[in-house]
Image (cartoon, rainbow, N blue to C red; front, side):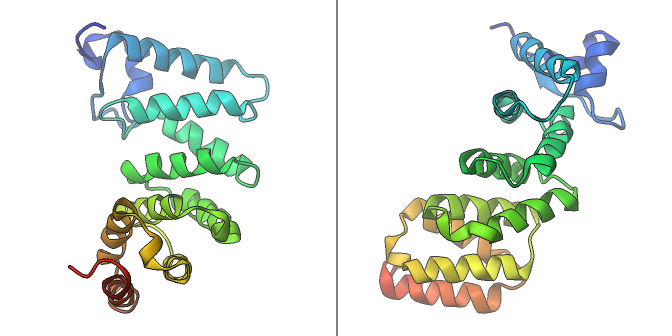
Length: 202
């Protein structure tokens, strides 16, 4: 793999794909990642009917997450449209991975988080503890989600018992709720139950 290149030394065609829409930020990538990424974008633009090839968009999410300084990639906007159009049929693993990716870049579009929250609320009881922990942490990190969303997930986790959470799961949940505006009631209850059930050192 070659050394990373700064995009602004490449031609304008590459830069239009890899610079944010306001042309203010550079994105640092290896040549191999640039080629793979641009190949995927070109493939998306070639689809007669886009947003239905699930394996393709799974691969686009994977490469988008793997790129350093990936906040302004065009692929997030493509994935946003894909998720909105397919929200009811997305596989759970993909949805959790997408929430993690969009949370990490603090994706700003309210509509994305609204659609995803509604989908989670419909079947949150079927998610494992780790997935719920990743979801709630990603929402909190991005500063998204309603009070109702956080409340029902906290209630579900407490119903399952805090003692059944791994340390990794509890840390994600703790860090999510510790930084919420509604933390006083829910966070204190979570901590109280955690102390009684498993994490006495809190």
